[in-house]
Length: 271
Image (tube, rainbow, N blue to C red):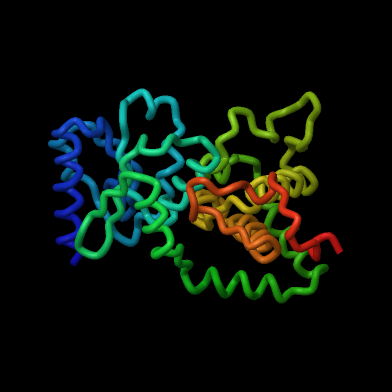
């Protein structure tokens, strides 16, 4: 099955490049040791270097808004279910133009070419993001903690942060040209990597991703000291879903849960 999927991926990307349909393929290639890394394939001859397996976890949708990638021409992206949901969310937030990117979803032994909003939404509805069992267990453990214990847990985890902002760089939905952490007139977030500064930064980021995080976990994967920071943004989005019935990454024309108002919204969250 793995060989069949790889062959289908190589064939499809080669066809897209040779036909001029796209000018660059954003995908995964071999990295150091047993790792994979993002690659940007621009000619058909090197398309055979693309790989696809369980190691391909980084959310490549983060590159779609990069000016240097845009300058290469129309892209195709080898997308995990999380990346597909990210692209839908970016379209809904007017950050990616509909039909401006060819999305390639590797499914079973075939490569599905998702060309429009309808095909993206159909695929997203049928392919939920699946967490490793240990993530679900950790989320359950944290949720069952009394509030003082939960606060102590996060204070301890966040104390290891040294403000490298790898979590921000890995997130497709952290696309602000100037982050709140970089504003100093006024200064909303203390830049120092001490307990208060770290807590301010991560709580602010989680709030900005509430109702928007598609639960890809790329922020946790990118963290060099292993802080499970994705659990904060995932929990914030799940609270939005519980209170407002809003789930990101499903509809290309969805309103933002945190910037729209509905008279039928539940108000239990303010009690």
